[in-house]
Image (tube, rainbow, N blue to C red):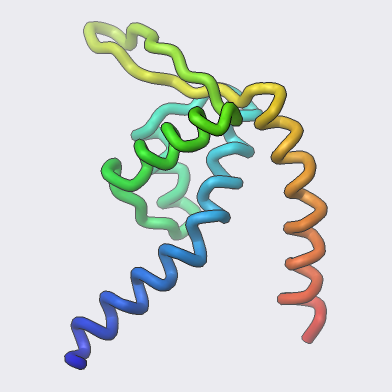
Length: 112
């Protein structure tokens, strides 16, 4: 396997591992207030996640399909923007996940 193929495979594995963290991150921000695609791409980039629109938008739609998010189209100047907000179910799911994340954090970081 060439180096570029192994690097690609490593990035794909990282993406699989991080996908749940990205979903939690998106849900966290949607609980705090409305989020939109480009804004979330920029926010995630500040935390070291590189995610394309082609990956983020299906993720947002998936969270909406599970009823964790609800979207609406709003006018942003001359253009329209789809914004997402957490639902009651999404807030409940995020609250439940915090204990699991805390437990994992302790095992990964403090368990050494």
